[in-house]
Picture (cartoon, helix red, strand yellow):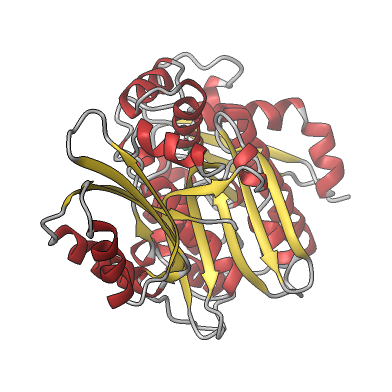
Length: 432
Ligand code: HSE
């Protein structure tokens, strides 16, 4: 057993950071036994030093994060401040001073993971970020290590708890989006500015990270097609129910059938109630992985919150400390396949389209012709009169699998028909 303690600099002492510090203190003996060396906090960088932090030794607190990461006695830097800067500069400075880094920063890794990995490798350091994707749920390490001998073809997940809570509320109570968002805010799930969650930015960052690791290629957040859930209506949810489905905000990363490219996207989609992801309720996350040899795997758990996220951070801390003790580093970036990321237009899936049309003869044939002209095959059609609009009907078309670009042109052409009064909703159908 090495006796010199490994020194850890903690950047950020908010909901996650304070839990990390607490667990490091209360589980010190177990961590020492698991790592093979004692591990202790060298300093905690905060923005507001005057804030009372129960259980945090005041003498460790500093406002100078840069000075802390430059300290030659620091072996590991834990970054839980989030955002691009100053996190990026602090992490690259930590590498330059020989420290390994554990980060929970999905935005930074999804934007600049390749450069960070390169910096880590140059300096013989580790960069681990299990906590960046779906909180406590082990995903990065299973994909990077446990499934390293397999070929992952698809990753399909609910990776944002706030939006899952909102959609679950809409599904169970019939509430509209705004009402469900208000409840999520009141219960502390949604932040005061919920944009990152409801517009899908948070999930898109996670999708980029998962796709890169799963397919051994480089995917950044800019490669991810993103649609949020602000347009999902109570009527979309009701339509999904009629089809035996529910609506989820999904992150979907796929290898193309010919294996020559990948896609990554985030959008609301209907999934059948029989799919395991349909039963993921409230603010929970779950990720479904499909691979050649293992088949189908599902990872489920709390995707956010101080204690669950700290669990993932601590797991990484133990891993990088073990590497330090052994004088080695863990697996770095694996991007050898260099697969291109195809645009959304090339994604092939099924669609549920709801149209408001004139209720007169020939309209169904006209609509069907537009689908046929664009090579989109119809699976089912359901028409029903609209008591609220005389002479109009609702037409719900579910297609077979078609390219997203073909569906977009179909919808554009439908909008041009006099008899189509409006396209009420378009939703992809996944997980079948
Ligand atoms: N805001 C995220 C969520 C957690 O609601 O899942 C942090 O990524």
